[in-house]
Length: 151
Length: 322
Image (tube, rainbow over all chains, first blue to last red):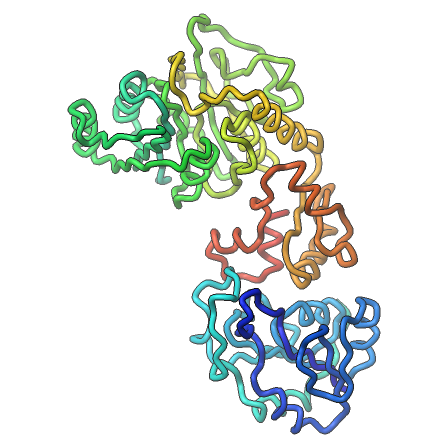
């Protein structure tokens, strides 16, 4: 089973968060194993099994149960890193060298896509689907991703 | 050689002590790289049109001292000092607009610069007191019960925990507390003590005398509202009350808390204020705001921006707290 965490925090101005991966539906079609989506109320449901507003202890149990996880730059990648569970992070405008963890598989299409200032609110950064890797580029990593030792 | 900014905040002293201070700065045996005057007057004037100041600016230019005159935002001198603190100079020499340094002051202060030093101050003589050595400890715990050691002649170099009025400090490593009121009571004690808490040494040194020619009018602290003083004094006391601890304020996201949690065990006596107590236990952010006035000095994103940070988030937390 794979856990996906598709969306970063909703922006205050109502625009789409530029860190949100745009090709989830295509990616999900390529994955040949059960998928559990996690998120919060109001987020778009992409899978049959969508669990919202999980407590920290429930999240912990879930990620230890799954084979791996795929997410965007949000608290979840830090949480899984903290729990020693390796996964895949899909990057676009935020810098994995600053906000990522080398223990994960960090997929960034192009460093030229990174926002010039990494430390401001994301409200002023436009969402651009061209900033992300394509689903078929992610697939090989999903097959090989494994578990880390606890850190 | 370290780049030094001389910062002067002024209010109501265009034609009393401010020209004396500027003249004293330009006559230093070690010149600053730049003089910046923060004009906090209610009705600021363009001093380039004044003949006296025209001559002062002329001399500054002849001596190749860059100078700048900025109209300040009238929020108090702590806001002014924080601007100077973040102007990318190595050191800032803060000089009051009624504190006239002798010609050797900056040179003497600079001679004590070292990697582990955060600030250096000399004597600040307050007329009509006669010059004499004051045997004070310079410890923050004694600030209410002993005269300030800088009010007298300094017999020998001495490490202290706080400085007063005019001193040279390492720029960009500790923030002024912007939560203080406009009078900014205790702002320099709080700031210099913060440098001490960050592990830098503070010294008072001999042979560096500044004459504090106090004026009955003007001054950046011309407010008289006692509530402002009480407010600032309480913030100061709240800091001193936990002198041996490290204040941690996590006014940031859930993921940031998770990353921070890895360095928490390495922090000396942490007193934590948190948004997510289920990740990092602690007291509320509202309480931190109430106790310390301004919590932006612990804003990790602001700090990373200020540091032009390219390392990891965890390393940024380590720089802030370890």
